[in-house]
Image (cartoon, rainbow, N blue to C red; front, side, top):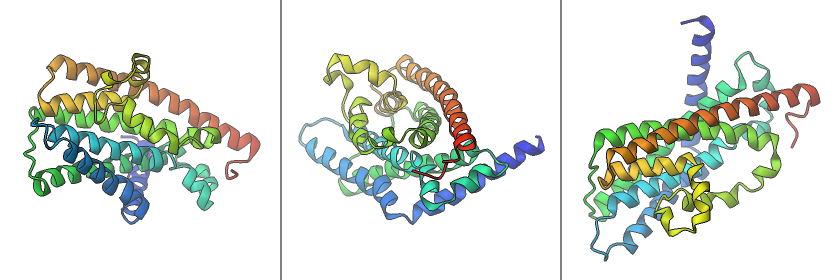
Length: 264
């Protein structure tokens, strides 16, 4: 392992550790990652309690995914913007460690921390409401969970520089939270939506993460369906990685030529 790679890994770990500890004491983030998904899970389970169907695991996974997406949108999306707000962005951008490595550490910490929402929803459904929750295919579910982390991190790496380079996109930040809940099929199938929205769902890695997790946890899908969702997540993650690399180049080029990195 080269010295440069070791240095970048140490920086990645330091950024992730600091972000994890900082998020743990931020009430807005705690509400977004834990309280809000719990409320969604509670409402979903209450609505479905008299249907006679075993939708418990479906609601738990779906509500957990809402917490993951909200955390990605507001925490990872603002991972660079927050440094601008605190006046530290110029300093971070000028250190030898690439800005994308620091952002990657913060995004990874947020996504891993967001998994708390899924665990919290599981405990609520299982203990408080008495829903028996069983993951039908634990191995497929574990692989899906790992690929989901990669897919969400790569998407977060697109949003972070995009929100800085194009403030007009960030102004829509609050407005796109719930539409993605719907388009990604977190809590109900996208077949219930108009057909013209289907291509939009296919372009979202959270949709394929939802497919893989729902099918592997409920046992209703076959291996081909889950594997297809895995392939889509891998492909989209690669596309997001290329796009994020281009956005970081644009961000740093503007910083060097215009000198407006710290300005709104």
